[in-house]
Figure (cartoon, rainbow, N blue to C red):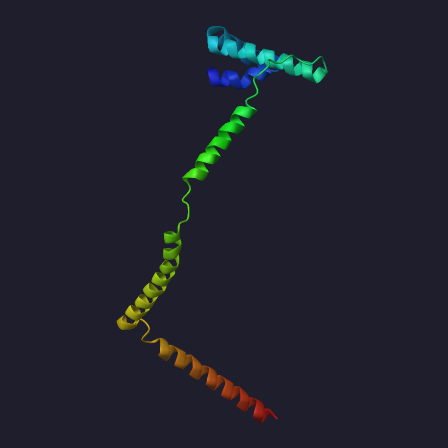
Length: 151
């Protein structure tokens, strides 16, 4: 039996829910493996703690841990201040060139349109529009003629 399997079955082993054969295998592994033996002791301690809490016993004294909140918040504030200082501040020269970029885009679009016209990409566009217009005119005329003859 490997350590991962033993650790998976550990809660059932502590509660005595395993079959005798599996329990024997887990016990033999724990006796031969110091890591799993330590894991078993920690799991038994947690199980006892959990049982006390469920039974409504006296609260368990947990160790005091230092309060890191103030340190963490001051560090966050330092990072935020540094980020604000590193941001690019707008200058007059930057503001003057920003509208120029939009004219550059319009100029580029006009050049591309002219190039596409020269290459003949839109060559059949007018023919297609005229053809659709002709079909619509014919269908509308025939519809009116049909309406007039039905009266």
